[in-house]
Amino acid sequence: AGIPYDIHGSRGIIIFFANPHMNHKILRCDTNLRLIQFASQLIGASVAVHEPLREAELMKSVRPVQNWRRLRTKIIAFIRF
Image (cartoon, rainbow, N blue to C red; front, side, top):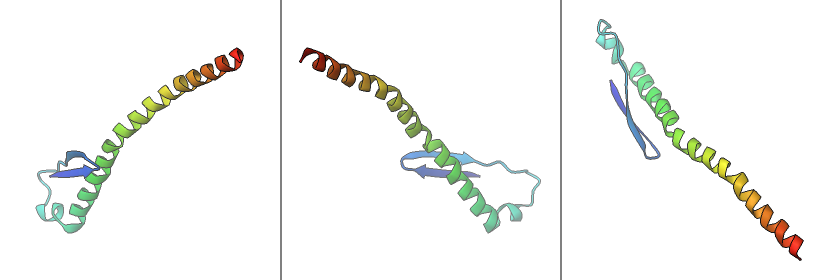
């Protein structure tokens, strides 16, 4: 079964494979279908959060450099006056 997900613009399809010898009535029961749909949303959410986490790490790595630049400017201004 292929279940699409769309989490804040991150889109994809989660593909679930089943045993071909399994009873189709059991696979298509409401409980199993809901489980597959919710599982695909959870998997999609974990994929969608990857990009914001990467951006946050990049922002964290830039922040100390920016802080040192501001501190350096303040120290130089303090020494000159």
